[in-house]
Image 1 (spheres, rainbow, N blue to C red):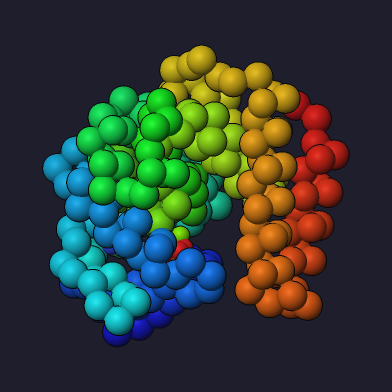
Image 2 (cartoon, rainbow, N blue to C red):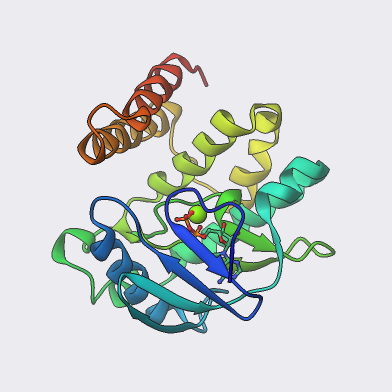
Length: 226
Ligand SMILES: Nc1ncnc2c1ncn2[C@@H]1O[C@H](COP(=O)(O)OP(=O)(O)O)[C@@H](O)[C@H]1O
Ligand SMILES: [Mg+2]
């Protein structure tokens, strides 16, 4: 098994047939259980990897074909990738959140829609010819919540990591089909998320670089205008 590219939080290995994702950091077991439960409930509803089992802090899934969204975004397909992300997010938010999150702890239930929790081109695979999404990955933060969470986070990923593509975000919001939450609500969610990721990093490694990196991202996000 080889380490897979674009694994940013955990240790994810693959061999072209199966993928083994081993969760790292605080709450690793909870995130494993969360991803296992949500992936199991999503089978057949949207394109997600088949779940093959879990043990010793690692989840085993089937390998999905497709090109990583970030690679397509960086090779000139930004509008198509963002359009596909918007269309798919609408479908995710139309699923029965109550049914899919039924096995999650009470704090992860009770919202309006199924929130992916780390949505964006960094966690989708696409068919390079059609730009259709072939896989939505990385459901460890999924819960039932507010649509603004996924809309604002996908926007944050583009603004922070792909600043040259910010003008293409309209393709994402248009394909989602509205309503687009107002900028103050989107920015407030982005700031909350940066704060909680900063705190998580500080908890994991009090003097480590992660806390400082998220503190910096928080300050950058606070300075953004619509
Ligand atoms: N089932 C899968 N099929 C193909 N590639 C996968 C699969 N699961 C993960 N990957 C690859 O591994 C990367 C990391 O997996 P992900 O679940 O996003 O972990 P992390 O939490 O570390 O970001 C993905 O971005 C993708 O490139
Ligand atoms: Mg990921």
